[in-house]
Every structure is written in C-alpha cells, then in structure tokens.
Amino acid sequence: MVYDITCDRERRRVDKLMKGFGFRIQKSVFECRLDRRGKAELIEQLGKLGLKTGFVKIYRLEYSSKNEVVGDRKGESIDEGNAFVV
Picture 1 (cartoon, rainbow, N blue to C red):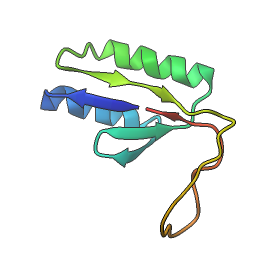
Picture 2: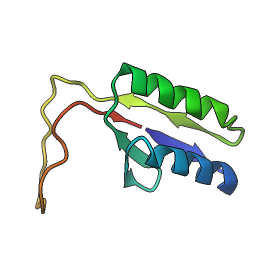
Picture 3: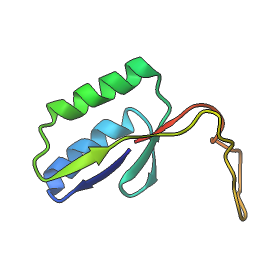
Picture 4: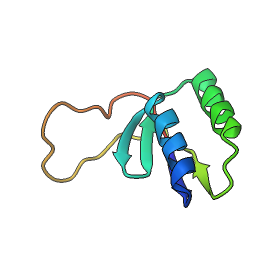
C-alpha cells in the first residue's frame, strides 16, 4: 500500500490502521501479507476513514515472480511468501 495524504490527522489515522495490517517499508509505503478476506477488511477499514485530502493505492505483487535483491542485505529475509504492497 502506498499513500499520499496532505492532512496530518488523516495521515496519522491511515498510519495507525496500516500498522495493524503490515509493516512499514518507507515513510508512506507498507507491505502487508493478506489473503482475500484480509484485503477486503483493509479496504473496508480504509473506506471508513473517509479520506478527503489524499488517497491510498494498493498494489498486488505477482505470486510467480521471484524477488531479486541487489546489494548488501543484513539479517534474515522477510520477502518470502505472498504479499500485497499497501
């Protein structure tokens, strides 16, 4: 999920909600590992926020694609499995 929201209050509400569904990748990017029911729940909860100063966009990662990492990565990978970038 990626969001672009100008109102600090709305942005904090989206941020708080997203922390319950996934983990932050960048300031306004979260990765969520969701099944269809989880995705539907996320969309429902986002709709209830009634955002007026921006938007949230959900990207689906292709299951058949293998993740590629270039450069030095420390620690264990969390990139295995299905995910929606939210």
